[in-house]
Amino acid sequence: MEVGFLGLGIMGKAMSMNLLKNGFKVTVWNRTLSKCDELVEHGASVCETPAEVIKKCKYTIAMLSDPSAALSVVFDKDGVLEQICEGKGYIDMSTVDAETSVKINEAITGKGGRFVEGPVSGSKKPAEDGQLIILAAGDKALFEESIPAFDVLGKKSFFLGQVGNGAKMKLIVNMIMGSMMNAFSEGLVLADKSGLSSNTLLDILDLGAMTNPMFKGKGPSMNKSSYPPAFPLKHQQKDMRLALALGDENAVSMPVAAAANEAFKKARSLGLGDLDFSAVIEAIKFSRE
Ligand code: NAP
Image (cartoon, rainbow, N blue to C red; front, side, top):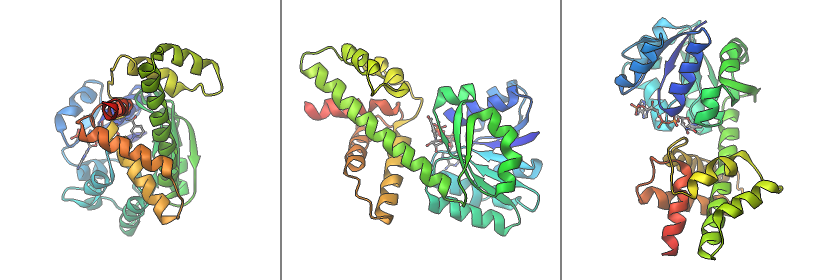
């Protein structure tokens, strides 16, 4: 199977590499073109614009930072819309809001193409290991044709119905994650400031009902103030912002998520946006000083 891949950030690089390793012919594009080099070394072809990728490939996957990036790659000059046509499928796996996804769907289908949104749950390591959870929605036939690729990228693919449902589900999942990360960070800081060992707190949490891979995976490095970016904090704050907007639309009161969003905003204002989202603990430490 031949696929195009637009966006080689933390996730896109790992995902396209996985497709290559599993025998897919992959044609890549990235805004900063030099990031394609490593993929080319592993057998990928490269194009200079998203339009060229679409022209070459029947199926193209995108993994871009946010709504404005997702829209720009589709609508701007040399973008996806210039070449999308009947017989071609576009699968956007970026985390965006439902409105963005609907806009992209209308434009793609307006030109005769087919569209699936497929945001993912899981971070850098699951992306490298092909263990993502895919939250797809849109054109059912395109979803089914994409299963060979989804099976390489993920451990489970959900089909959630109409376009927008995948985006909403993903935002809800990440809203919960962002709130959990804040509660966890407050606990670690409070343990430390109260004269307790935050490492012992990790051991205790790990033995009880609150144990989870996120606390287990991130806790030890957070206790060393180390935040190598697996999921950049600026993207987590974008997801909180978009989830809160979904809450506004549906009149759902979400004070916990709103407070978590403030902490991520604070962390961004401290220049921590490119670090892992666990660096939000630094904003909590900062606010105590
Ligand atoms: P990332 O490392 O920041 O990569 C972002 C990608 O978007 C890069 O390829 C970047 O190109 C591209 N981009 C940004 N603005 C653009 C624009 N205006 N036009 C064209 N391309 C643009 O982010 P990531 O961690 O891979 O995340 C990608 C998406 O997956 C995000 O929506 C994120 O929320 C979601 N996600 C991430 C994780 C995770 O753990 N990292 C997990 C699940 C979902 P350049 O290289 O040129 O900057």
